[in-house]
Every structure is written in structure tokens, then in C-alpha cells.
Length: 341
Image 1 (cartoon, rainbow, N blue to C red):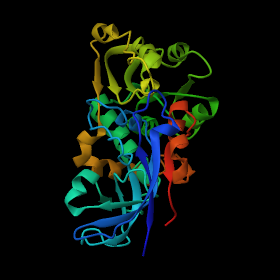
Image 2 (image 1 turned 120 degrees about the horizontal axis):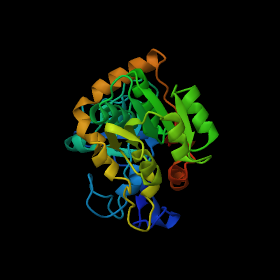
Image 3 (image 1 turned 90 degrees about the vertical axis):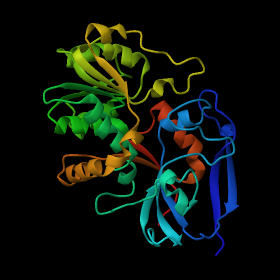
């Protein structure tokens, strides 16, 4: 059977917001698996702010995507041909499949690709890209391991309605914290309070973040989980308590800058308050993902945890869909649906 694989490859290093000329849409024939190989039909792909950093040349926690290479992305799919006894035909799997319709995974390369079986009794495919996937793992370990919450702490989360933010806030509530979100627009703020059960949410598009923090964090901030950087980080630093923990997960407000990244102007607040600011990368916790999956799946089953996804259909829509992340247009975890089973 002849199969054609449509792919998005990186054609140029973006300057500012990625544009259509930064991509090359290609088609190639799909090869049959050889010994030890697994052929996966990609069903859904995870679109994440970190992808913007992977397009840049330079030193980072992971090598950049090479010019001409299929754009890196995590996804979920189904094994449709296999010569590997670990992954028989019919298995649902996750892995670093890239922006393409099929992925041929070599048995010798399973570690890099991160191929893993999925238990759909624990969650849907899109939930395996959100609460049970990389965003959920990021929020879970970033908060619990780096933020080290204690019952009664005031936790502030930026990007609160997004993939990582929704996990952070819900886990903080489960651990007995008071949680204040920051999100863009009334609909997102209403969702964060009504459905995710945050104590309050500040609309950065509808008013002053500083005023919102003054109102909702009158006794200061013990933990700040930062997904956006820039002016919002500065505003929170001005209200931290002694011994506060700031978790640096991302800085989406800075990713498309054509000038150097703007660092925090209020960093001396860390000195005055004997506070700690620490970066986190989810891959450092890979050997413990199963623990987080077990906890989050149980919380979802118990009705304590919500996993919201924003699903867009069609691989041909990848460039425009990715840019939704940087306009704040997405509502929940952004997922690109590539195919039906």
C-alpha cells in the first residue's frame, strides 16, 4: 500500500513572529518499517510556545530544529505497521513525531523519540497532550518540585487558562493553596474561576495587573509560576513575600522579540525578600512522569481536575494555528488534529 506523508519543514529561522515563508510544506512516500521499526499514523499534535524557541539557532536546553528538518512537535497516534514486538499494530502511542502525518520510528531511537504506550482508559487523546502529557507534567513538577507549595500559600499563575497554567492552578488548589490567575479576556478569567476553581483571576487585557495583584494578593505572593515574563513578571516581583519562590517556566511575551529579551527590572525584590527564582525544564523529571499521570488521572476521575483543549483540524492549518499561541487567541491547550483513526 502506497502512503503519502505531508510534512512541515523549517525553511528559515524566523525573525519575530513566524511567517509562511519560514515553512516548507512537503510530501514524501512513507516507507514500510524494517526490523525493529514502528510506523505511526499521527492523529493529534501538541502546539506549544516552546516551539518558537526551538526554531532559533543557539545554545538552549535542546538542540534547535535544523533548516530543512521536519518541525519538532509532540503528538499522539496509532501504530499501523510494526516490526517491533514492544509496539504491536493497534497500540496508541505518544512521542516526538513532528509536524507530519506519519512517523517511522527506529527501534534503536526509541529513547530520543520518547515513544510510549497510552492507556485511553485514563484520558482521551487530546488529554494525553494536555493534562496527562507534557503541559501537565510541566505544571505538576514545576509547582510541586520547584515551587514547593504549602497549604495556605498564595500562588499566582500567569497564562492561567493555558495548558500549563490550568494544571498549576488546579494542583495548587488541591494542595490547599489560595490561587490567583492572570489571563487575557473576560471569558478566560470566568473559566479560570468558574471551572478551574481559582480564587480570583486578573484580566491583563481589561485593566492594570498591578492593581489586580494589590486587590487579590493583599497579603503578598508566596509562589509565582511564570509563563509570560516581561511586565507581568515585574508586577508580581513587586508584591512577593519573604521566602517567595518564582518558577520560571516560560516567557511567551518575549519569544517573538526582534530586540534582546527584556529581563526583570524588579529583581532586587529577590534580595530584599530572600526569595528564590528558578527555571525548570520538564525533561528533567522524565523518569517520574508516571507518578504525575497517576495523580492527575485520579483527580480527573474524581471530578477535581479539568483538562481543556482547543482543537484545530487539518495539518495544512499548522502555521496559522501555531501563531494563535502568541496572540493569546487559543483557549486551553492548543492541539492540531491531523487525522481520524
